[in-house]
Image (tube, one colour):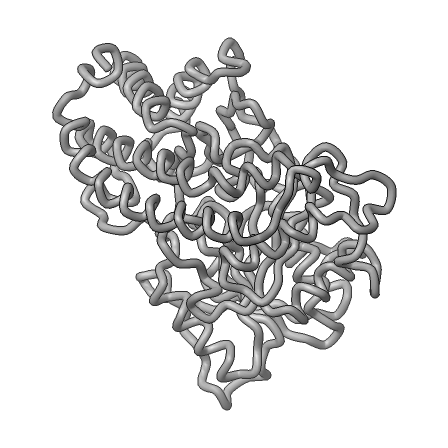
Amino acid sequence: MRVIGDRRPDVLRTSRNAWERIEAVVADNMMRVASAFSTSGMATSDLGGTTGYGYDDRGRDTLDHIVADVMHAEAAMVRPQWTSGTHALATALRALLMPGDALWLANGPVYDTLQPLLFGNSRTSLPAHGVQITTLPTDMNGDPKWPALSDTISPRVVYLQRSRGYQARPSLTRTQIQEAASQAHARGAWLVVDNCYGEFTLTEEPTDWGADLIIGSLLKNPGGGIAPTGAYVAGRRDLVQAVGDMLLAPGIGQEVGPTGPYVRLLAQGWFLAPMIVGEALMGGIYASHAFHAAGYRVDPAPDALLRTDIVTAIELGRAERIEVLCRAVQSVSPVDGHVDPQAWDMPGYADPVIMAAGGFVAGASLELSCDAPMRPPYTAYLQGGLSRWHMVMAVNKGLDALQAAD
């Protein structure tokens, strides 16, 4: 405490006042998750996993029911066969969209890694399969400008990305998602929400607000910092079944799929997720206060009452500052702390990306990480932290390094 907390005592004192709000969210979510587990009938023998086809994998099926309960959904699938959120999102959109269908992107540009699926010219892109993609215009607040009901062909799917990704807009709120659900349903469409970075940041999920299907990566919030891979979908039973059929094959989508050695890690990650997400949120609050006090523009603002994802965006203004901050974060990482991160042309990204991430699970964004596309206005995205104190440590070191470099 003396080493970490005394560096910026005023920032820490202010942050502590806001941490109480997060503790209330953690308590509510933890009780919701614990109740779903304790009433599920999950047994020690369910945690051993399966091989081969994965027939009669009781642990897998029980975890699906638990996640459906937690997310207030008709059905859910949690699978280690998905390697990322992008993989699960691509599976879902291919499952729900037929040739001639329309897909509306309702909150502007989506995350870079989805661009090839949505706008690429490969044989596996959605346009190549006859899906019409429309990006709705947005107002100055980032809210979509919905066409009149009689103006255009109705979409099959309305798509929302809850988190900001690499965009300047804030993450979406309950009110915005409810409005999107209302607009989608008025047109006979399904609302699909990319829920990455958003799980357990509030006491409800988009399925409580009208979303028909939500999708997320276990390398982020619901993996609890333990899941080594995987993703989930939750929502309407027929839509979840369609996604399962696309992942594997029609008729067997939810009946097979071995869990190998992973089912215990996936289940325990979900159980711990509310607590770990709370730690990440409290670390993010400290980051907002500290960088704002140092004169940088941050989002969410230090006095924001709600945080609907675990990301803190910090506008640094120069590429060199991004490099300084990422190197500082990397230097306090528990794994690969000696590595010097460099920007490079990562697959799926339009610009070189620098990423500081030295965690126990490669690419796990719920662990402390900092990344940025190397393009103006040179905004760094700081997220995660299995402990708030790890984030405090990284922020203090990053600010000291920036001050020394300037």
